Length: 296
Length: 176
Image (tube, rainbow over all chains, first blue to last red):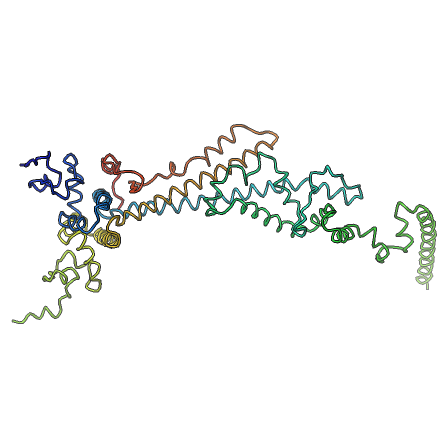
């Protein structure tokens, strides 16, 4: 038997307890009459007395939020009598673990594709290297690889120019990925991504010194001394030819290989012919001695 | 007749000790509230009440009661630490973490799609369907694949709505 109050129907709490719902009822704002199941769940888990004690200890602005959480708590306990809210916590923890694992896997794939992109960008510089080794003239200023990094010539490497040469469709660092960068990198600046590129590129250049030494001749305006030194290292055959003693034959024969000295080449050819004759004669004499030796 | 059994009887459980009553041999609390852990029962009793806990345990199978008591103890401790949100605060924090991770995952997948499309464009025989296949494989939202859990609680952004999924009738049964 429900006793209706002057304002309207009794709340679900008073209806359940079969008592008069007064205007001062603490639970009336939170348990409307049309939701009896909600109050039953809460009453089953907490009890009316404990709910009233909880509400008395809270501020008026916290009561509504507290009742929301209590209702949710009771509903979870009704749905899962053994574990209650722990089911939701366990599920969320598992989802977080899955998400983190998937994020790691995707980041690895992304790193792989970035590395592939870097290698593809480096492939034109290998052709340039082969041309230089063949003694061909270095290309002019129109070379897309030519560029200057005046501040850090030691960090000079072809990859630092990649952000310049990267095609628009392959660039990623500064084109609309701010949210990704700030979220993943904990609100760091976008330059961190570029610095990561530079760090990777620096390690690549350290591993492949030939490329870096070949590329550095382009730094004509920044560090001439270092350029000259590297240029010397690049062309050992042309500058340090006097120090090369391990070559076969005489020094004159070695010098004759240069295109600039045609006279020496003629002399070398003649001398080579003489040497061959001498060596042939020596072999002939040796064979004769062997024959004579065997006959004894 | 002095009862010598008192010498050999088990000490009262934490519940009976707190309630100051005789701990009978078939006390429902004694297996789960040992006398060495008085705080456990005190917290549970303060939030839920001994009678409510007793009724709950009687409705559960005996082999599940220990887990039920442990979960109640955890929830009671959480409610004592945070009277407003209780253990639901931890749930909302975890939900936000899942959303953040989902956003990061989607952004990373979008980056990955960009690279895979570049590589496909560079291939001599590029197939337009291959990029779509990769998109279906990687671009699908993480939340749609895994699900957001059985219930959702967001005390900050959304007002309480009685038409939430968990109130209108859970479909899944408890995994025990």
